[in-house]
Length: 309
Image 1: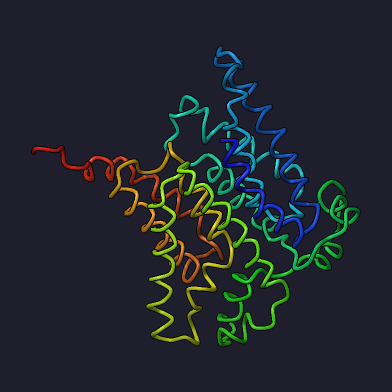
Image 2: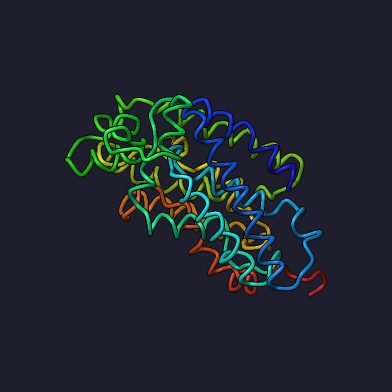
């Protein structure tokens, strides 16, 4: 778990550079809420705090959840989502190793559906410490938030196409577009490190990115004015974070070699479908949770053949 957290440093650093100190505030608030919730629920279940509270799983869950949030998300939303991730996504099913769904994505989807407006507080440039803390902990008014926030590349693409703009018109002049590319590049670098160290299987990330890329390529070749290229989808939103750090959860993901490829490929296709025709700009969280439902079936029907049979 600690090596996974270390691998997330390049992408996290890129987010701090692009968005400001709010990213670190989200991480700190989510970490405190997750550890507190874990400790309380372990006590209620009459389980010892050690080694569960120090096995780094709650820290990783908090980090993945916090990195999915916009940098100006109010502190109470971050704390609430992290607590839900631990309570409903992990402890409800019996704790470590028992959860059928990715805990971080459970918490994220709950707050995304419950508080959609607060989940749009993305910025297009770094925000100073004072303005960030005022937005996250103070009573920031609409004027302040409107002045600090802006559309992400996926938001801009969706809005532009709805207004009958071409793809290049919708995203061509968007400020901060290349910042997202650097962020995804940072998570790609960390993910490759985990693959080289064999902490995660190469099958799931490759299948996720192939599912996104091949599907995007088919529609891009059909009509490049209405559908964005694979490179855009790989470098926007949570593509690399989802492929290398979220979909590879060893508990809620598929375990067989063929099952991992199908699992990852399904996530990739669903991400593209939700981004293009769904109600949300990015569909990584929903895609992961939907494919988590298929894991028992995949593991049952993709068992490798026993040697000699």
